Image (cartoon, rainbow, N blue to C red):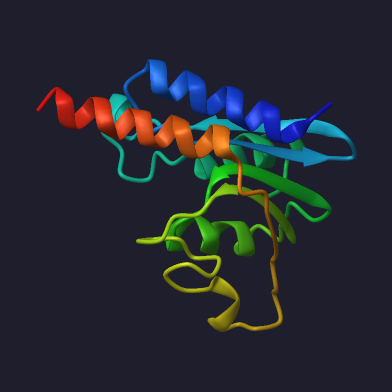
Amino acid sequence: MDFYKEALLEAKKAYTENEVPVGCVVVKDGEIIGRGRNHMEGKSDPSGHAEVMAIREAAEKLGTWRLTGCTLYVTLEPCLMCSALIRKSRIRKVYIGAIEPREGAFGSALSINDLPPRDHHVEAFWLHDEASEALLRNFFKELRRND
């Protein structure tokens, strides 16, 4: 299974729900244990990010907040809040589809790995996914057109 494609499917669902199209999955031992997409607008929740949703579901499924041995796939570079949550939950590998130059916390605006504690390093793998970038571009173009 291509786990990144599953994250992209979540982003496409968010798009159809008029949410910023970001999707995420958490994987352990070759199985998706958490899925998420943005729900900020629909739930009036500023923490309703795809990563938060996927991590909460994974933690509930495992019965622990420690997601040791898990890998996260996300269509857009996580913000500082989500990056801190990824690190706090002990996820060590993150696959990122698109760069977020304004708020990305895996090297674009800042890096979570530069902040203390420095003994919890998260490895980031950049996919530079055109499909995710196009989805985001189209979403914001439509949003501006409807204003």
